[in-house]
Length: 412
Ligand code: SAH
Ligand code: SF4
Image 1 (cartoon, rainbow, N blue to C red):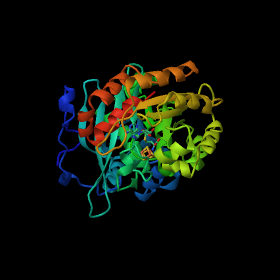
Image 2: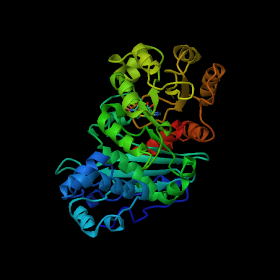
Image 3: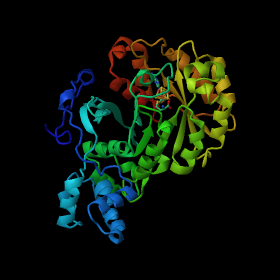
Image 4: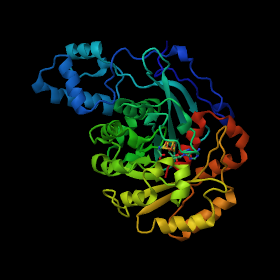
């Protein structure tokens, strides 16, 4: 089997062909026989070094050297780790790999957006799992949208991920692995090293946890993974540039603030408990008032560090002007940004995307209340167009394309 890291699978230059790229056959997948060092925390690396016989007093220093090779240089071969002795490199290579999650397909769209379909080991004897990772370039930033789970245990009625039967948590390594493989594929390691204190010079400058899954139901792995990603001596993506989106797992919101310290986005989608109970069933457990209290108390929240409220626009369901006014009232006193997300339909859904005029009227009310650019442009407009005009094409989209559209609509 050829390596997914050295074989550029697809580099299409038309949007139409970008939608229909064949995947690598499932049979090609081989789960790594040995554990990968990619994604390990410093402590885990020190332990790994212990396993290959490095004496305890040397482990911290060696772990630091490994850290640099993994997360600053992005090396894909133990032989390149020239600050480690040949013997140590050989011992590591016998026991570990530097494998990233396998790329099963890569798509490049006309606007530079890249979508990766990744395969992860399944349970012994069963098929591998698949998740998505999307890169969205913009003029002043490049945002990577990461998945935290295969599928999702919550069943938000407008979300396709929630209809998937299989659910497994990603490991911290698989979360960090998405960032590492994006840097590989975008040739971003050199640029990242040269960028120094100017993060916007890197291609991957921002991270959003808005792919598949509910990150706060995989708390420890997400926390450990994001702390590796934010480490200033490594991948170095600052916590102000990392946004975690949750459907409202209240007990873990405060923990996210204390133990991760990243920016928070909350999937609100409704202004009454009655409607939110239906759209986001988790609301029955954690209702609106308590959710907004948790937001008010989110550690570090301020006008410079606002909470993003996501609001998916569903025709005739939550998009009335009465809803818009109630939304503004509800968020009063919370340093907030509002992201109106055009609904992306999927086969079998009972919802439709709100009409463009309705979204405009809704956003005017939000804008008049002091919230800037609630619907993103120009790409947001692209997506709106897709939402209304390409409905039949959108119905045919795979989960991968829908996720990309969604992610594009959501980066702030
Ligand atoms: N589970 C987390 C993060 C992943 S979903 C959460 O719910 O916040 C990321 C965002 O996409 C959420 O705001 C979610 O409500 C929204 N979303 C899900 N399905 C969508 C769809 N079909 N169209 C538009 N937005 C969608
Ligand atoms: Fe899960 Fe988020 Fe989808 Fe709800 S919107 S089902 S929490 S991924």
